[in-house]
Figure (cartoon, rainbow, N blue to C red):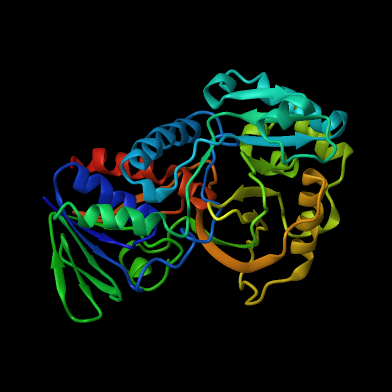
Length: 373
């Protein structure tokens, strides 16, 4: 079988990986020299902890298994089974963490409520004041800026993978072929369009309006911390954002403890991961209304610096990079991904939202299974 994959972000690359793993030939087409979108502009978190129970959690847990297996074969992914800590302060935040630990699926996530001393034994860099911390053993991390490159190198070594950069697919031809802006026709037994946040042009032509929206975020990265940050770190605002924490305790938190005005205005949470070079990737914001701003604003960065410094108990290293990104999210956020057959033999797979990096291996596996690869 020959599979044509359009889009070299993490979702497209994982579809290529699934096809090659099953013995098929892949032609992988990317409109830029390499992926430049949300697949690089994220935390690199394999984030199990906040996922909704049911299909979303099952997908994340399966993806976590696949990431670890692929990471063992492709060291360039930088896979680390580091877990995460969410420090909490005050009775209202603590009650949300306790409700999470009481969930029936808490053991699958590796939830445990730690004292400050226990949390610092896991992550000594957390010298700030807090009352407890929610530990999630199943969370992990990879290097988002280099993961696709490492996967591509491994795919090229198989001899069954061809990468065609700087080619924008303009037309779906018949049932199993696409034509690019060089005029070249690429035909196979199946075509998978993994176009990320590119939802106009070809996608609109072949799929019509899709129930997917675009979301913009702001993030930053620091100079090296100078010491290990041994886990991912979140703050209690993540309780307000992730569905796993929905509970009466969360309702009480929302009613009784107002979110910081800057965090509320920009729909913020803190997530933080240390990169292999020692720097910290820190974010993020959420913007849903179009048209998106074309610039980044400082207030969210200043808020994040304050939150991080309060948890680390020390000044944050200098910020070296700031960026904005846009990803595609299903309008119905309970859906893991939008998977649509747009023609016989041609599928569109998009809209995982902030779950893309986490869930992409399992999303691709399900596509491969449904298409009978």
